[in-house]
Structure formats: structure tokens, C-alpha cells
Length: 176
Length: 239
Image 1 (cartoon, each protein chain N blue to C red):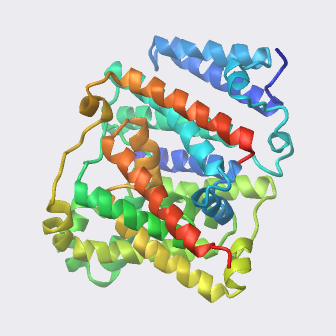
Image 2: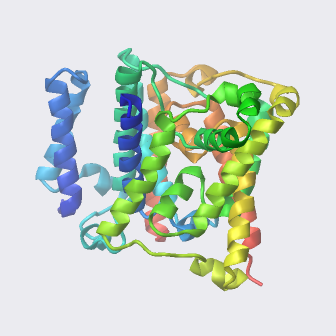
């Protein structure tokens, strides 16, 4: 195995381990989050975002890493975001958690993973069509919120972290 | 102020802090990694000011010590944040390109591999497979790793359970494994189409994109949860 593959495998094992420990891989947790009845997934994701955000910005400011924004393609993000939400609720897992759920014995997630492979194959066949339709409507490119708003990235990060902190407080008070 | 840090939480803080300081000392990370003294101090004194502020107490979260309910999602989430930072750094150093956590492109590559077995010429000529490159790359191994990480964690704390139909699904739609499998499959097809159009899933957009403050990720994540909430509420509407 190459260094790249070993690194990927190791990162994945830790990622899967932590998601399983947080119990976010379960169907009940995924649906619970979408019904706003169990906020475990929100707590998990927002905590990861707070920590990751500060570290990534520090490494970026030091010139150690580069950012890799995904394009703000209007048709792609709007239609794709909506479709993903629908599929997520029906499947009960997202791409990463479907594989993780199978790892903790929830084998109905495997059908979702197979559905995603089939769906990805169909997408590849349809790609030339999407490229000249949905994906060609309007593309604002790979932009970050700091440039879009003209505000320093640390300011945005602090505002987000404080907002997430308030959300956590609210979740805990309501016992969600 | 009273102690508000449980024992596992304390170990993670002290362990993580030492790793950061070691990386600062060895010059792997910049001087900012000296921030590691903060988690060590909070761990040693069993007191986290941030927890007091938001009203969290990890001593009282029994799951942390008993394994039954797993770890606090705040702690596991924060550790995923550290993993994301370490992973961007290590991929930059060892692969020459800053690479962020993600999962959905791997399903395209898996489809490419499957199709290659039948019709390799078609895969070689398809614009999308050419764009995403059908190979066992970093992310492909990451997705495989997720499976084994989850297997490792669930078998060692005895939370591994074979499940064909989740309980809440059973209550709402009955015990048929076929129905659940069909929904899982169709949902997967729809979700991956969305993820490829939007160029990311809750890992790529939700975690990585949000950490980088990408505009597209804020929009995508809002739509993921928004439309997911609408459909989940329709599915689980009380009759």
C-alpha cells in the first residue's frame, strides 16, 4: 500500500471509531436529528466544526496548507442539496455513516451503500447532460464566506463558535 | 467552581495536550500548538470554564464511563475536529495536496471499478470517470477505514448489533426487511445524485466545507437538513 492509501486508511479507522463512539451511525440518531428530537448528530458535527475550523485557519494563515472550497454552483448546490436531503431521510444514513453503520452490524445500511454505487454509476452516465443543464446555470466559483462578506475569517469563526455554544446550551436545557 | 470533567474526558485532554506540545517542540506544528497547555491544565484541575459557561458536565454523563451509551458527542466531535486538522496537515506533507475529509466521490470510483470489470472502454471514455479518476485513492481507503473503525469500536465495547430493520422503522412501517432494504437502496440512489450535483455530502460539505467557511457548504448543509427534515417528518407523521 502507498503512503497515501495507508494515511487514508488510518484516518478512516479513527474517523469511524469516533463516529461509532458518539453513536451517530445509527438510523435512530440520523432520523432523530432530522425530526429535531435527538440532537446528538448536531452536537457531534458542530463540535467537530468548531475545533477543526480554528486549526485549519491557523494552518492556513501560517501558509502550511491550502483551502479547497467547493464551487458555489447554484443549480448543483440547490438541486443537489435538496435531493440529498430527501435521499438522506429515506435511506436513514449519509454516505460516510452508511459504511460505518454496516461496520457496527446494521446491515440494512449496505443496501443504501449499494444504492449509492448504482446511483453514482447513473450519475456518471448522466453527467454530460447535467453539465449543460443544471450545472451550467450560474457558478459563483470557489468562494469562502470571509471574501463573500468582506469580514476577517477569525471574526466569522468566533461568531460561529459562540453561536454553536448557545445552541449547545439550548439543547442541554431542553434535554435534546 | 466544582469539578465538571469526567475521567475519560480528562485523559483525552491530557493526552491531546501532550501530543500538541510534542508537535510544537519538534517543530512539526508552529508555536500555536503550545495551546496544548490549556487542555492539560483543565484536565489536571478537573475544571473546564467553557463547560461551566454552556452548562455541560462530563462527570454526570454516565455513558462516558460505562460504555453503554458511548462517548459524549461533544468530545467525540471535538476529536474529529483534531483528526480533520491532523489529516489536512499530513496529506499536505505526504501527498503534496491539502486533502479534506469526504466520502461521496468514493461511490463514483466504486461504480467505476464495478463497470470496468464489464466494459473497461466505456469507463475510460466517460467524462465523469475521467474527471474523478477511478483509483484506490486516499478517500477510498478512508471510507474502507470507517467500516473497520466502527467494527473495532462496536465489538470492543459490545455495542455491535446485527440489525435488518431499525425499531422506529418497525413501529411505523412494519417488520418487512424487504421494505426497509428497498427504501435504503432507493434513498441511496437519490442521495448520491444529490451529493454529486452539490459536490459533497455531510462529510465533505458538512464537516470539511464548514471548517473552511465555504459559502457552498453553508447553503448545502442547510438544504440537506431542511429537505431531510421535511421528508423525515412526512415519513414519521403520527397517524
